Image 1 (cartoon, rainbow, N blue to C red):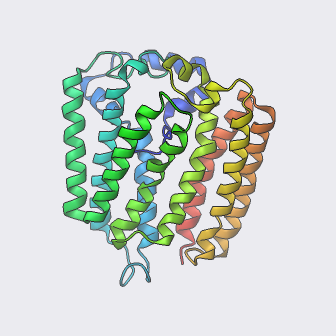
Image 2 (tube, rainbow, N blue to C red):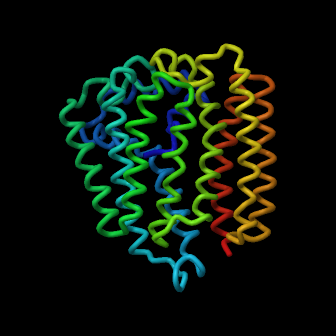
Image 3 (cartoon, helix red, strand yellow):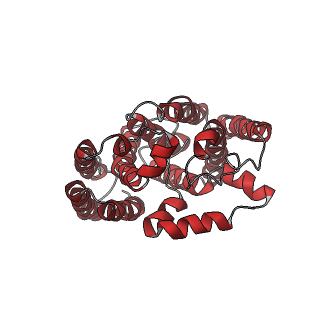
Length: 322
């Protein structure tokens, strides 16, 4: 489970966007991490931090009169939801690396991962990932509610059984990967209210449409790496980036539109609406620039715009909750 394709808002993406040579140098410096560091890195903690943040946003937005009797934030329930989500997301990171270890070894940015580099055995990774996954789903079922556990299982299975293998044979993998990447806030809503509401699906749509230009920008920056690994990201299979450019604009426009819905549904007030308009137009401008020039420089700017856009938008959503 992850916001990936979607899925991969890792610090390495920031590093290579800033300075590819520095990123590779830093990777070499981490060639011999400790065994515990290797287990930790298997869970893809940097990527899954976004999973926990968006789940928390969903929980907070659902914890209000009209969705939860009495409103109010149940801190204990939130803690249980985050623990179960973290365990499940961590397992998906482990199993993803287990499946893709051979392909990771072909790409400079992932060649030093614990399994790709051969520092951990396949048995160790399989047991570790399996225990985390079972514990995560069980935790959500027992301490939160069955609906959240079911959503966690759907997210996990979609990411592992559909998105992960699909990266090898279809450019639609990015669209499919955006689904499990957008489900964590829905899990947060379900954890707090024990239902999947229209409000939850609006936040799902925001995360879904945000991921598309975000990861298309990453795929432009990582074209050579993804090609080396045999992954079918759209920017890697078309030379002129025509379809990639059109999709960046279409998804950026869709994001601007759906980001206004929380106010229409009375989830948020005027302050959020104003912020969503400004942020959406600014983000769209970076998308148009990238689609027009089709250069790595503008793809890098779009990438950084995306990682600023989402936390600001979600922060305003929480601050202006009605």
